[in-house]
Image 1 (cartoon, rainbow, N blue to C red):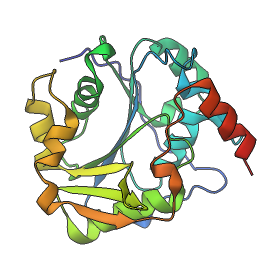
Image 2: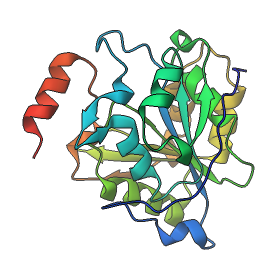
Image 3: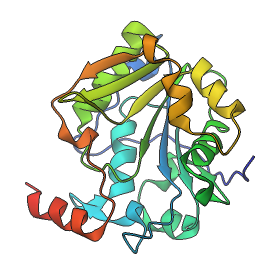
Image 4: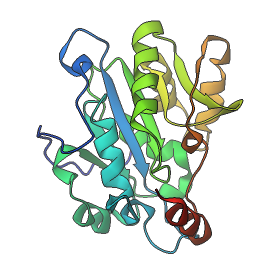
Length: 224
């Protein structure tokens, strides 16, 4: 398993539009969060985690969103680990896991993050860092659906297409941890398709990844 790069985790008030969900402090199932930011960002040419959107980095915004429903939040970094750690404002609100070889694929990064999930967590919500437009309401609805149904997998759907963030119950992430590193996370998740809870959302961002300069330019041009 990959080396774990961990910094301290502390609670602090969230400014502005992000409010902590009462489910974090009640008897509701506990959901940890994983933000995947271990890729090389070759097509973008710079770490996507540090791109600016709505006056903060992609990663800072997603940490703020996940803080409403997830505890702890784990950020998986890789080739740009130190640059990302030093380039965000909310670094003290998360745990960092370092994937020493992210070119092995998304599953290897997901496994690094899952290795830091505490035993008391009932589920994990995960999201690639290149989905900065995700709405807070979408994150909350995915969490609420898991709290209601407790399905092995909970997936947001927009216009018939499956998107992110995905919420997986503990038995599923135990399967992911036990999978060979050359496997695909999607293959494990698809084993549970018959028990998956799908939630329709009016949020196109669940499908939209900002993966190259053209996509980023379009994002900035469309920003309200």
